[in-house]
Image (cartoon, rainbow, N blue to C red):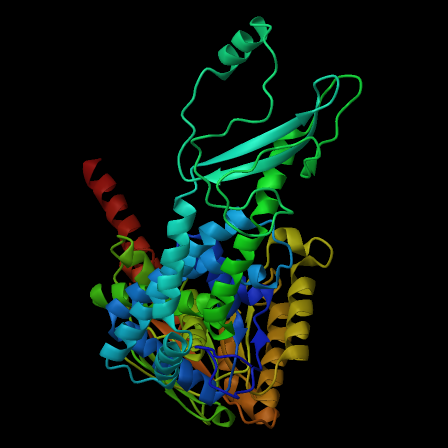
Length: 571
């Protein structure tokens, strides 16, 4: 396997792909739009973001590479310039394999790009040598770039390209000879010469008509005096420089097919093909120059384009989030088999992105700790109390940590998961055949078919049907199954009876994942968006809200009595 900024040498590239539902529920496309406006960049980064690895060695490798990108803006700028140039060079390798010699004009343009490539590699070499990079991945890239510049003889390559381009620039005009048949239809054509000065005569049609009116004898031979030649003539002529070549009746060149009825011909195409054909030797010489210097190790860098874009765009975004005042941290990676994770000051990166774009959101951070005593959180709280935002925040933080990206938190330790499964409310159009309860149950069954004890589950208002009894019955079985399997989960719900049943559910089933009750907080009738390990607070929440807005029975009764007393007094 080739060099990669995402995988250390000889590492097993074993990944699992996020499901379509998880990609949607984690708002991956929203995040991609924040990373870049370019569609092709989003497509590249998306493929990397939806691929999950739980290999601690790979994750630490990525994390350290990202930290180098984050620490050095000048590195990101140089890498971005490299990507722009490499994008123009992706097709260059095919010229090395091309056995045809008809691509001269494209190849000449590619020479300029190779020249830029040489300069860019040299710039990378200088920047990577000057910066105090620490990661294994970037240090390896530094050595690789250095080796490419040394082994490929870039100085000689640049000199050869400059010399070749100087010759190409001298080509200013082409002298063409055309043979005619008895009806004055073009029958064959050939290149007389390639010239280093422009043809400056004008009024060709006027000159032709003047010639036809004179009724003079046709010229014998061809007068090309004064034209300077620096390239061989017709394609069969050996590649030696001549001063002049006259056309004759037996001229061998590109034969032109004509129509016997209309006299139409393909003269223009024939001339183009003839010019390209005659330059076969020049094309081969240029190819040899390119192949001699730009070896396969140089083209290997083209394969790094998506990975470089991934790190550059994420580092730019994380920098902006830091500038907005929100904390980010480098996560510590724990053994996957522990199935633990701990976050201090966790928040949803989507909110931070909105603030970067000009919103004024007061972002509330929270702590959460998954361990042997608590791996399944039944999260309850009021509507618009932050349950979905918090559930999504945890899933995104785990995904970013395993991608090697800085985590939206003050501190983080994670045991990597093997995949992230989400179960959010379905579109009503998807529930026509089975009904909502049937469709949600089917999706849950599919998740359990794929999940392992190292998986994450994010359930958002799952099984919240019109029949609370039916939803609660299935929800309890789902929690029992999660406990038995051993997954980590946040199940946010309005079913307070489910949260009240956690002790009962833990006692009924043996398993390594215990369920606990987690609530979002409301204090004095105000939503705080803070989460706490507490029993469900449904009644107290309602009481707080009722008191805040004056809709408790006692408040309403007092208000009614007051109105009645006032009316009585007026009478």
